[in-house]
Length: 256
Image (cartoon, rainbow, N blue to C red; front, top):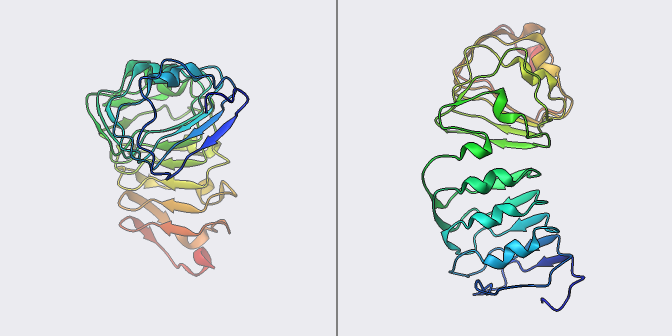
């Protein structure tokens, strides 16, 4: 395949392949933008030759490919990479600090591996408190998965994020007690999960109809108080969970 320098996309999903030639020194994929050899049986480490694609590669998908060993630091030197999926493998050891070099990354999956240690500071997070400073460089962030992490999400009430979320999963992290006023700036959000996050007090009036794109809202298992009698939900909502809070009032207007 290295004989095709004009190749821009290569899809090898579920082809029962058993090797990516991990020790190959050089490849001539000078135009390759999408590389997707997922769901195969490689049973070796991530190839070093991936670093040769640093000027072209936008999307690298390697989920469920039986990859093993440490994550090589040079894989995070792919300067144009926007999407990286390494989930469901047997990768071990810590996440290299070079992960902070992914300045254009929008989606990063590392779950369901055998990684350990702490999240590198170069990525902007620590395993204690996350505040607005950690998001300064994430201008193109679209999807955020922070659920069930030992984090305290502590941002100023006047904070305006530099990005526009599409998807925010923030269940079981400490965010309360105040309702998140910065959400009002997120007009593109379609999925929001803030269950079990220690939020208390009244939900503001703007929340129920602040985005025309929202399809899923999960506020369950908090301490939110709200009279639903004067609330009108957005017509795009498909799933709403407000269980185990302190909502009250007639629901006929609220749901119809």
